[in-house]
Amino acid sequence: MSAWLQRLLALLIKEWLQIMRDKSILAAAFLTPVLLLCIYGYGLNMDMQPVRVALVSESFDPLHDEVRAALFGSAYFALQEEPNMQAAQQVLRAHQVDALLYVPARQRLYQDGEFYAAINGSAALPAQLTLSYLQGALQPVWERLGSNTGVTAGALPLRYSITTRAWYNPDNKSVFYLLPGQLIGIATLVCNVLASLCIARECNRGTIDALLAAQVGLSELLLSKLLPNWLLSLASVSLLLILIEVLFALPVRGNIIFLGATLVLYALSCCLMGMWLSAMVQDQYLACEYAIILSFLPAILLSGAVFDLRTLPFGISLLGSLLPPTYAVQSVKICFLSGGNIELIWRNLAIICLYALLFLLLCCYALNRLRRMGRKVQ
Image (cartoon, rainbow, N blue to C red; front, top):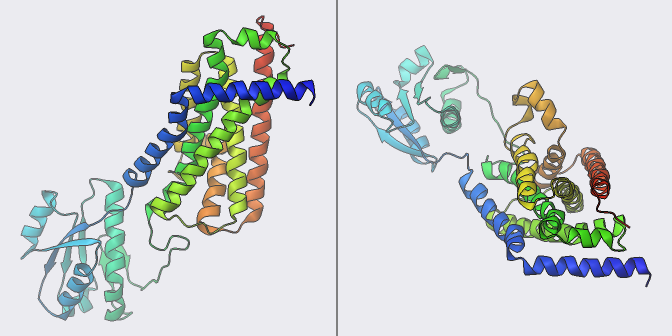
């Protein structure tokens, strides 16, 4: 065995023993991701169930029975029948229901061609979901009324029957849409925080001088710090994948090899970024704070994990397109939900590799900066 390999092996053993002795690192690697996954998976849920609807009918004819059956037989609605419009408007103003639905008599419907729906619009997203649920529940009723009958829900004219189908997420479960992006967000946090402590910890303990003064080359120091934290990060990501499948049954419709390659390379780039911050700041508390601010928050807010970048202002959208989490989120969503589009995944992998190379160069610069400060790497 060469002297280079012997020194590298000794440094790897030293780093691994330090990780095993520090229980806070193991908690950050395994306990924190599990807690965040449960919070995001169960707490960050945009599905609305049940929708409380006050139903008012002009006459108790077969049309009333059809509408009542469509709403009463669905798990998405909690139906509350009111005798007149005044009573229904009163419970809507009191926020006791989410929507008011007025059903005219069948003959008047043929003449005027409209239902009347009033939605509680105090919150935009619940109002949109309520209207969407009402449209979906009443669509079979509209189809049976005939194609020449006009129906209006609120201010939206629905004079034609439209059959819709949501590809890749037919049940419109928000957890299926959110979890792939949140997986990248949690992986970003874990990888950056773990790596941001490795060199800064040596600086805080005063052992960095001994490392830099010893016969340890730059490559040996980088690999000894990178490999244990990278492997620990991959173990954490693997645990997240298992929990996602066990707890939420998220489908994997794409190529699992591309999914694994995306996560492995992205974890590498995040670890290199964390090491760069660690070497630049040289304080583990500051390095951890910078890792959260510069990596985790952009990965959640500016990567398309929660908000579509097309809905953001141009400058913010452009900033999001420059961040590596954006491409990891895009690839992971494809691998989980839709599959296909291998060319886009290959492009994203290439971009992530370029970011990993960039952070590697920045790590080398940070260690050279340490050398200029008097801590020489021999």
